[in-house]
Structures are given as C-alpha cells and as structure tokens.
Length: 238
Image 1: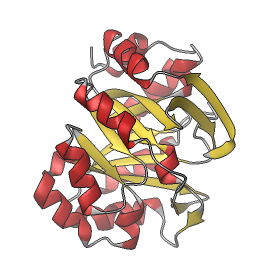
Image 2: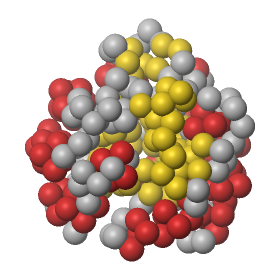
Image 3: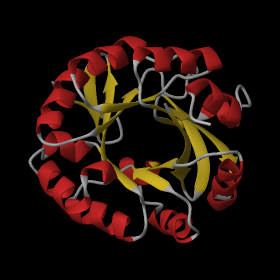
Image 4: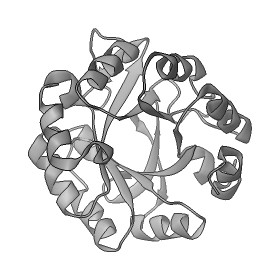
C-alpha cells in the first residue's frame, strides 16, 4: 500500500483545514518546497499537493506547484482542476498525476479524453463525500450520487485511480472510513487511495486490511502523531 503525504496549499503556505472549512486553517510552513524536500528525505515517493485556493475559487497556487515540479518533486496534484486543458498544463509542467473531481461529476464524458491524452495512470479522480453524497466545488455543494455509484460509473469510462475522501473525517484525526473503502474494493477493480481521518498506525494497518491501495496522510504527520517512515513500514512499502 502506498503512503502519500499531503501538502495542502493556501496563499502559498502549507496548511491543513478541518472538514474543509477555511475558518479552521492551521499553517504548518511558509515554504512548500522545504516541506516537500523534507518529506522526500523521510522516504516519500510521491506527494499529494492540493490547491485549496483554486478548489474554492479564491485564486490559485499554480506558481508554487510549478516551482515544486521544476525542483523535481514527484507530485500528484488536485484542487480546482476543472478542464482537460488545465490538467494537460499541469502534466506538461512535470506533475506525475493530476487529480480531478468536480468535472468527473459535471462533465464525465471529458474523462475518457483526458485519460486518452495523459494515460490512465496519470489521472486520478477525487471522490469527496459527506453524508453519503458526493461533495463538489471545494466541498461546498452536494451531488445526488453516492461515492460508490460515481466510482463505478467512472470505472466504466476508463478511470483506474480513485481517491476517496470523507469530508467529515478530513483533518479530524477521527479514523478512516473503512467500510466505504472495503465496499468499493469489493465492487470494482479500481485502485483506491484513502484520504481523511487517519490518526494512528492502527488506522493504516486497518486500511491495508480493507484492501486500500494507498493512503494520503496530512495532519497526523504534521502533528507528530506518526512518522512517515513508521507509516510506510506498516503499509509494507519500504
């Protein structure tokens, strides 16, 4: 199971939010590049970068992302990527994988085009959900679909990677949503990455047992609850 540390970007800084609420912002670093380099030194093979400003329509951190990519940081980037052209631009900058969310719901027929242009392993779909419904546009709106239903529809369109984020658990250190992860793994052949709520090595072990192909870690690392190396050992990816 992959262990992917997260760098959430807001106004050029590394931050974390609780439940996606901007009023809960906590700044961990004013240098995303230094943070990324430190994560690589501790064993990270890929870093999940989220442009929170772009996701919420409040600006963007694309220059920061370009700086990270140019410095050779292996990146998986999401947040506000709402067109094939924007996804292609990120990939052209050197981003290894682009993560799309809202367009997968609003314009699902664009997904096969993106996959054809980029390649299946360079595209992931972020399936964020709250109260059993898919959350869109920086988690401000809810769609009618359940996360499982959306994931199965997208699999038919050629999607290989799905990142499942429980909004209620994100940044809350309340444990991952094991049931949804396990259900999707049983129902599909998708590679499923879990995000949200991980607070302990036991959580990581439980995700591995549930069949998750990867886990994204944020607050648990920044708060010192677990180390990246410990997480990788439990996940079996050292």
